[in-house]
Length: 233
Image (tube, rainbow, N blue to C red; front, side, top):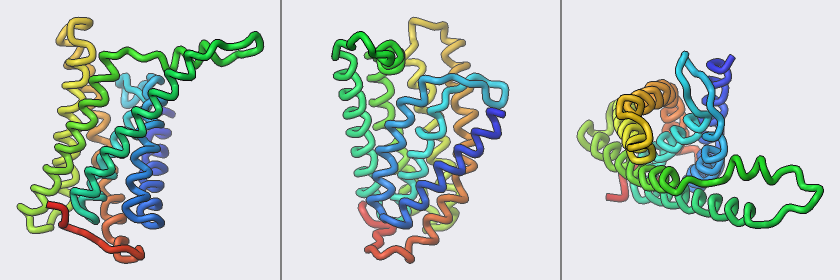
């Protein structure tokens, strides 16, 4: 059941991203990144089993940001892709600040949500710092690697640059995140196992997003906008 829902969720997320790109251009993709980052910060609180492995529901939404930066880089150039990362980080920080402020309000006698909110939104500073810093680093690296491969292949093999940049950057992010967030709390064998599990699931997600990149790229000329494909060096 969980596996089927995972694929349904992927199709919904990637389709929404392509639709926002078609309707609103670069602004739609950048807006999607802000929404996806906020949703991922909520969904990551829930753990499930996928493909016999333990994972969190934030994987799809976080991974979809790599598809978003690839679409921005492919269709508008790396400057727009970098704007998307900055906007996503600002959205995440705004969300975190708002939820922490909300927890400071004293609930009244009829409130039933405070403890649930506290469970969802109480932060561990080390984990939060690791998550935000690696989100920035991995997405900027993905953008630069994607553009590098685009130039090296003369604009051919979009599937190659999409998967190589996403899998390398996302996989590296996973291992570094668990090392920074949980180093000293868990054994290194456990940290490597958690990073490997997250990477396997996100490799599957990355492979599934490739058709949506082609759809987004092929529809770019149907949007009433100036296209900066290959620009932004």
